[in-house]
View (cartoon, helix red, strand yellow):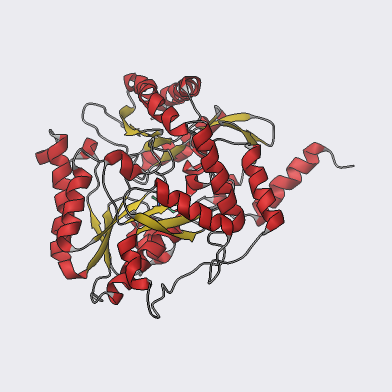
Length: 460
Ligand SMILES: Cc1ncc(COP(=O)(O)O)c(C=O)c1O
């Protein structure tokens, strides 16, 4: 008879032999076990040894309603029993229709048309393809370029990667799809000296950099600007006041589409269904994924303004794009059940009521010498780590490697917290707990971070 110890060892061996983890140095598991997460309940997940972890990142900015919700699982199972699959190519199914209508009702302005995908990358890819084909159909075929911000992550498929502003994850796949243009992000902590003292002035400068890029590239060649409401990569850069209003004006001036990439920022992450609602701007397209199902099944999509659909509504015009599993019946049924939970439990209100407490709890960490800045909004925060608080000096590559990869990631996990130690920009710890979290969870996060960051400082 196989003992449970033997079974666990066999599982480890199979994980190491057959499974390929994403964005992961597989070599780092040569002498250690791959963590295996076996179940979740509320804000916590449990590993193969029964150890509990506070899910401070909602998996990967996904599990808005928390883990173990039977009513959502059952909605998926019911749908699989009734109609497990049928494509959205020339056919509709009831749950896709119902979800499209519900999302159109929740979305700002005239974003009434939903094109489903299975992921965020596909949503971004679809938005770029739509922008290109829309302009071809409306007599502006030379518009194909896309503007996005430095260090911003917009996905991994070749189009989305060309929009992404992270050189290191693009380099192995060069040459890139042509047309990606970069502008500065809204990292006020590291703003250029001439706008360092005034947040609003900084925001106007950063927005005007988009106009300068449009002019440099040739206004008639630019199709769209892709921006997250709060930029994730680099560690949660909120928009300065007035930034998005200015960007909207610039896009209108040059006939460029504004795409709000809300793969992370929608579905309550910032206390609203959509991040653009929090900051009061009207996008032409919203891309979404992750929180729309809270991860109970994969789903993404884009919400599109009526006007962008218009050229596709008559004659032989067809958006020549599609994905087999997009708008999957099980995923759309799950998304509807997920949104029911949002409503029943007032999750947006929970985030809005508690976000100040979350911030205040994280800001307690500012007394540590390694904490440079705590920034973010809603239930979405980054903590920038620095070598010298006064000068804001950051860690060099070796220190970053030792600190983040060599110590912090593992130490935080060992201490019972799932979060992200990320150095794609300057080193940050990122937090995005489920929207059901309250003060007790914030305190637990703070206590674990305090212990591990204090230890980290002694190792520099
Ligand atoms: C802003 C943004 N866009 C796109 C993506 C890509 O989404 P996916 O991993 O579902 O393809 C992500 C993923 O984290 C994201 O944060």
